[in-house]
Length: 521
Image 1: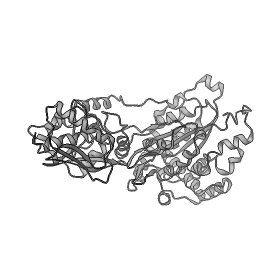
Image 2: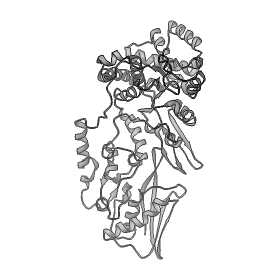
Image 3: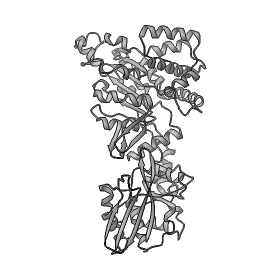
Image 4: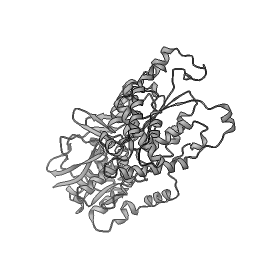
């Protein structure tokens, strides 16, 4: 008897359908075909043991299992469950009238328990988009899809739960993910704010007003920021505090970022969609594949630039990073996506992140600090020259961070708290959401040349000021557009409808590392 069970596979952050075909005929042996990897092939032994644990017999006939389409590689353990229910239905040990109504994925334990799988969120989206009645997923994985109220998302713990749904003999609504105890606990956690990530408050950071101002502008417009200064001057603390003034993600941003984490298997189990903006801080020795993403064949997983989508990618010791990684960041910074190509597949991942970088000005770290530097001029020039012009062009805000005076450290005057700064940032972001409502973007940093022409008209005074700045600094066309974007954000923070010359001047003050000045550092 030929049985069809519907599953899925993730390519990028989208799920595509996979049909598990099970046929039992005269003969002997269990045969699996359809370009399955080792994890899928091992599923046969897990499946047989789990079925026997539940009292089902394995027919002494030829069992052929095909994963269609056969020209697409299948990977992972998520096909255990569809294979198991396919064997039960094909051997006619149970009647499962609901089998064709749901997308089914899950890893089987030897005792029939069901373990988590990656990619549950795109799978639930596929089920809704394809017109299925719903999907059947492991309980914790199903929690990723609690927002899909238009389709039935079942969270199951055992093979018995799955059979109960598919037999349609009783009401399985208690297995719907939003009726589960785990969902109730999640709501209570949200209610009492238990999910807030702890980060430094700006009131705890003494001095550094220029760097704080740059951080506020970066947060308000989604701009990239680099801080250069001596060790211990507060660069890392400012970068971590910056995550505390960012507004919560919109539902659309949360959905896209959660899909990235879902296919990477890095979601917070039992927490639904990600609500806080991600803060990723990979070590500077990480590999190129860890940064950009990679894998073999069409099993490609996202890297740090995609895991930081709609959040912050903090790169400490920026000048110590391998040049291959620094130059590879050009594409994601400009296009806000990363394309990974293999012989049989090409996958696009979103990578719309804020780059926050920190670096020392020289190998010893103390250039510019009252004669403390022990490096030669050649060493200093060689150190910062690792940051190529094209890379620096893509960083909007550049700040030199000096150590705080001892007198200010001792007095410890209280600075403006993050809550107040976050309020201004939130208002500026709301202005941008209204501005770009029909444009498909969220922040000023995402504007293309077309949007800049439309949303950033400049008066004669602004044009004259900008022309003088470009001539004096020798800026590239990319740096020119970045000054306009920053000026637009400064105007939004000030509540101004139009960009003023003062906004242009402040924006240009954050471009001190441009090419004409490289030789001076």
